[in-house]
Amino acid sequence: MNKSIKIGIAFTVMLSFMVCNAQIKNAITESVKIYGNCGMCKTTIEKAGNRKKVAQIEWIKDSKMAILTYDPSKTNTNEILKRIALAGYDSDQFLAPDEVYAKLPNCCQYDRIKKSEMAASKTSEDHAMHHHDGKTESTGDVQPEVAELSAVFERYFALKDALVSSDGHLASAKAKELLNALKEVQMNKLTPEEHGVWMKVMQDLIKDAERIEATKELGLQRDRLMKLSEKLYQLLKVSKQKAPVYYQHCPMADNGKGAHWLSKENAVKNPYYGSKMLTCGKTVETIE
Image (spheres, rainbow, N blue to C red):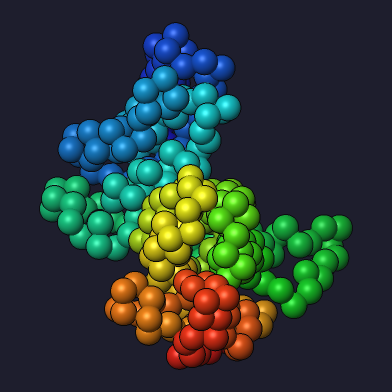
């Protein structure tokens, strides 16, 4: 980066901080690289990242640098960059879904980071993290990507079990735990395959968990579990697991249309009917 660009960035950071600091409480400012080409990219990136009185983005076309000013008590860099990725724009942390990128106007289709390059970078970082003083630290048999998503799946299983027990209050509480786990996922620790699916299902997963948490009505919770289970199934299919997970089907659920769920047990315990039809259903796939 040449000297004139650095000076321009520094001036923009200072100006953005002065303007936004008056609107955003406890504002802090960071700069990150976001890939794009033109003025249309700038408009889309800033619209996706901005949140009134919470976050303000200034993207600089020539340097591809974005100035992020935000209230750290209400958001963080990852949340902002996730929104921008969902709008079609890669950063060094998060890649946009391929289908969203493909829909960008031709002039906005920038040269992308290759998923293999992101994975190689992550592997290099992980390697460095587990070395010090010339010695290698063993991390055990569990890979980082397994640990990163395991909390999401475990919270889902707890929610499913609450519905097997027909306990709407417990299901609401477990949905809140699932919601927290979803929001804590660090996408830079996912494999490229997991990342691609995560970007497609993340918003729906959060929406479904929020709706289950918001009610104690079992019927509504079970309806939402159907949608939640289908999205988590997609994610589970590209994730490494420590133990088999069973994809199970009830032909009576959803007014006879049928619905699936995920279980750590091969024995059927139906979350859509509980004790009324506890063993209604069968295992249709074992995911290992």
